[in-house]
Image (tube, rainbow, N blue to C red; front, side):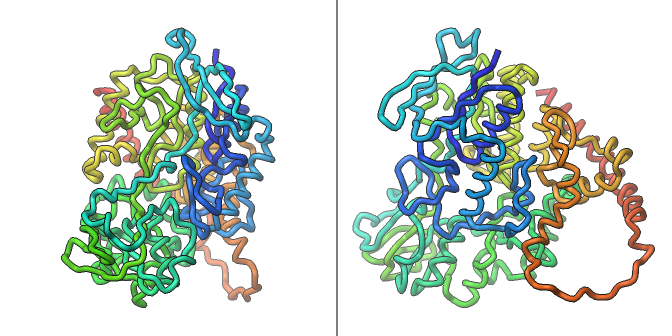
Length: 550
């Protein structure tokens, strides 16, 4: 019987895992190599080897209502998108509220996690740690939750670029970047147009003499703001939109979305237009990049071909001379050196995971890897749900398919994703936000029942089905039900509005209209979405049948 669970890391994932283990009556023991919680979100003035690193100005790109833990809303006065220091403060509030610090062993590094000799029967693990005094300790655990993150080993592909040995400027990875102070009046090239690349290019362009942003394929750029200045994810990530995306032709959805984005700024004109369609890959979230291009502080360039003395050569044959620094925003190598090498059985030594969580090769499913995925949505709610599912599996309350079935599902999902992500490694990481959450919620027994909700609480049904898919939805019912979930959903837009209320603005006079009656809206929405929901259930059943056929 599973009792003691090792949690490796005390970042956002580790904190959620500790709390969920306690909720389930388990005994978590967390090992954190640093002296504080927060993981990735703990800013440090200088990068430390084998640890994640962020830049000083980093602001979250998912809004507070969408990214919070499902039973602990963020403070109402928090901005909708906030600085990394405020997210760290939220983690402290969460840890203090649920009394999680007592489970964490700080400055304790996990050196190895190995199966015990009787693993096939017990499912237990031997874990070797080194504490702050350098003393090695051996522990035995019934299960392991890996929450150490995967942004610790930067990939710096200098060998791919001829001439880098004699280049007079400085080349370094974004992992080392902290702020733009060192680039004042310099000429800078930023390589890579992910979210970090976009942020760093914008920030350096405000103080550098000139900043060039190099991209291999281009990207669709979206703002954090939607219509009326509301948080984009609050208006975009809804169950209705998810169903419409499934039902409508992808060509139509791509055309409409790209048309709307190009009306704000023509991606072709700005040198941003990618080869792929909007739905195929994750967009870049950046409010300021187009404006910096418009004023000439930031210049778009194609992929870097090589270096020549003080210049950077691009694939179109152009050369930018007198470059002082090149910042490579080229990603990270996924590595868990403390885990058994046998778990990294995928192509190129990648870790193969069923539903991005469980290694299929384990005879006993008593180890789960948290947060090793990519999605078009917030990370924290998914990791929290991963933890809720994982502990159910550890306790034997949820069963995994056979190894053969899990491998078949992995292959099927990766093959599907490779239509958008030709790289096998990238394709394997992708998950669809709401469907993935719902799948795990169904395994845990907390997926909302829309028919029941419609009959019992139509007002809440409208909020859940037509409104943003906030994490509170997965605390309405079932194991881990939270009494405050309904109220949290009904007041979520109040918390969105709260930080704006810094000046009294006269309200316009308006007369109530019968056409805006809440009950009339509920009735109309019920008729429309019931039809859509019935079609979605047919789609879900087809997907389930397809998985059963694997």
